[in-house]
Length: 284
Image (cartoon, rainbow, N blue to C red; front, side, top):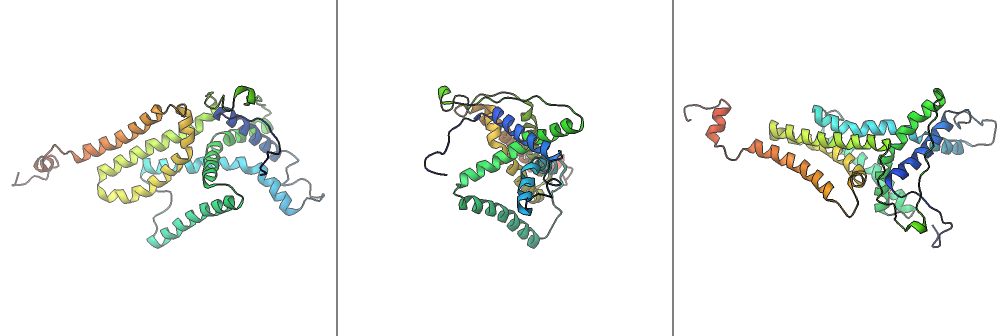
């Protein structure tokens, strides 16, 4: 990354055009994967070395990771809605190993990016867009590629508009263009938000003993929402106009606190509560 830029170009800067561009890249990778020129089985008589072949394979199979990624993004919400957990119940000793493994994966990624001169903020932005692109453009590329290669159904090429100096530095930064690519990540967000409300309401109605298992489920759901938060913010409005997202979080918190208020019921005496629950004796 030299101090003086090596070349100058233009690129889409709003969410919709960016996802359409990523879709084209991922669709091209899927087409190569399903063609006779796939590096998995092509060119063994040439001079392509093993590591070079693995590098080429890595550049064409990455859209397939969108399928398990989507499943992992939906699992926390299903766990909150059903009361189950992603992993079976384990001992505290085993859970510590699980947490250390979880932390070491992200520590490795941070160290790699720091070694290459990338900041922690850029690493987090890269993680966020990996989830946003994986649950939208990469997923669509897999199905479109299968339709094109197996069924012969071709898809239209979408030309993305790109910003230039004549339009200003950020002329289209906040331009929102609805596209079907926005449906999967929006669905993931809604399901996880509903799962959080359902999980908290169940814990409130079940008593304090259910709060311990709830925190593990909430951690994964909040982790998914944190990755999709820029998408949610861009979906709801401009960066300098954020009342909409404040309303969303207000509704979420209001639902949780309302359920908590109903559970505590501070205006009802203990005797009335005992009578309502059938626990009233001679002291009523």
